[in-house]
Image (tube, rainbow, N blue to C red; front, side, top):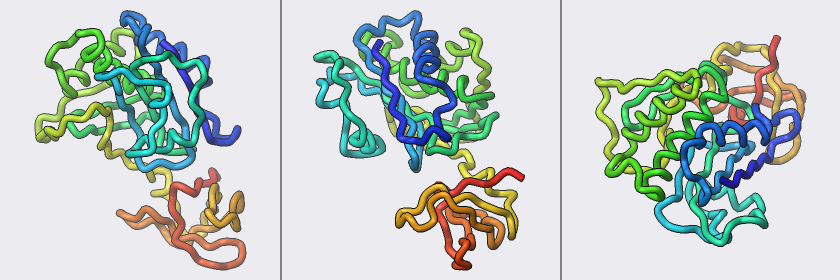
Length: 257
């Protein structure tokens, strides 16, 4: 198995695990699987509307197919193609977080097939995410798990990582009808609260502006004008020049008191 880590965040927002630690984790999860034809790329990017994984394992890929310009993975075009890729390979891509602000753990996630998972830390989260995609690799490339789909991949991934000692809890929610759309993508429609850390902010709290597309307020401190509305993706803030804005929360970071 060949592994590549791509990170566009600053040193202050480096991934929760180093490249060596992530590589070791993937090797543990895949230890009983023949991964000689597998390439795994893990990404940490500044902004994303989703996070999850995809297994491109039904057909052989060429080096120039390592990146794409379409869909959820179009950001891969911003990174170089590794020079030492095999002439043909199967690919798993993983995007463990939505952006530079990593999830708060324990993290509860619901997928589109009626399953609920509780991850105690980032290590458990990444192990489960990779195990699910590895199931697809095992099925389509190695001929294992014949006829099994997304729900079976959940069952296998959960049992597998728990056997390896990862602290993950998961169960099928009987009151939800699963989405029958077949996707080789884990957590493709998960619905955690990405703005949980913003919910407790009130007027007057300070907020750090991580990004401004116009470059005016990058790295500056603003104040919250009013509490976050239930379904809003923007927070009303006042910048140092007394201007009031509705700022995307992906570009903000709460300041601990």
